[in-house]
Image 1: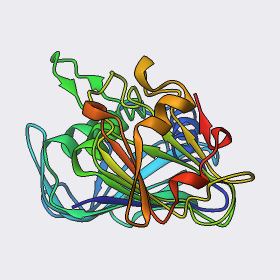
Image 2: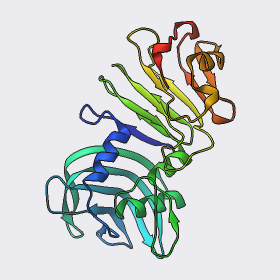
Image 3: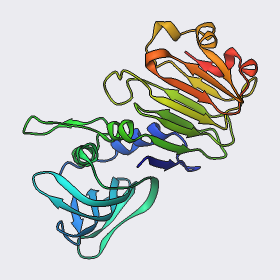
Image 4: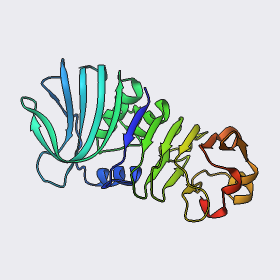
Length: 260
């Protein structure tokens, strides 16, 4: 199932928030289950002392089966600060940040992402002491795709390796397409859809500075790769993927809508 993330007025930059969260994590361990690993409704990782320390809680109905597999259903991952609670009482975050809605059985990518989160707060993956490379949450996003919903303000939404649905909402939003976002250069950004995009002066932005392609690093090249398909504008990067701007007339686009 696709992962859904709703930005908040306090956290309008998805990757910016996660970077800040990692910088304040300060924990390296396996986390803790509530009530126990065999039949859990929560798993949490983070230091329980200090109001500025980052923490993460996984909610659902799941079990941990050694040597490294979750079974059951994961509802969501909650990110924030000031982790409180215990295995007996359950866990909570005094200050909520962002929540990733999952609603699915944990697969290998999510299993690895949980390990990477609890061992240093990495979103791009870590190497376990055994030498096994573990994926990060960004890799999981690339596998299942994301739906990202913005706020009434100026948001920053991000494309991952899979197919993403980016809804900026109101405000002058920036949609970032970075093939290196997961820590290694991906072959494609996927086939992404952008809704709520405002073209023209004082409009929104498509950031292609991380696309890493000399074939699409000017406005003229991107415009030549775009076409009107019904009410939408589709930018076709060939093997690198596509961006569909829903409800946008190609003729309304200007160079000011793009960042290279």
